[in-house]
Image (cartoon, rainbow, N blue to C red; front, side, top):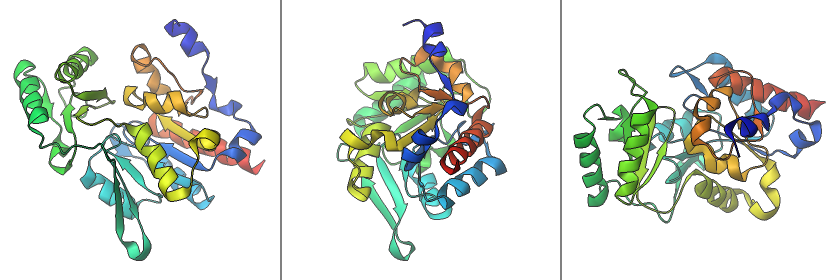
Length: 272
């Protein structure tokens, strides 16, 4: 399918029906460049999370960000869990404000000698590449920064980094800011389904339409492909050449403004 045809199949989020909106129980979203705008969590985006939470929806960020960040998010944001490091684990706040954690059974710590060797190879072969500043907070993956801090590297460099990790046998995904690499058979989708099933009694064979996911980059593709109500913020189209499965819906606004737009449409349709 051509890129133009794929893009033409995207529906504006304003076309979400009241029936579809009332079916949704779980609202999942990426963080960087979906909730955030130019690296900052805006007031409107954070307020949208609170509105969704107060409406009784299950709010669950699914991100490539590290365990250290996810600890804070689970404790301080209005969320019902956070999937971190592209699916290695989920954190959530349980009774008595105790932090609970579910680790994917296939997750392999990032101290694995194969991953360390690949990290060193990538950094040696691509001198402009650098470890993400949040690497010290990670448990299971390696994050190479190509666009979070300056100098911003071209997308072609991110693709080369991804290829080097994959040639070494690792999984690798490109987000809007990092290339994440890990060993172990999991991704955002498999961990999300595992968590929803274990904690909420979700049945993926029958309940997929009760989940909406909002994202912005290639590492969100498994979620776009699986959930029929998936939505992209419009900056996703920057990566349309790298995404074989685009979501059903798209916002007109980019990043945090697009997420806020999505949340308002969803809540308005549920109330209509």
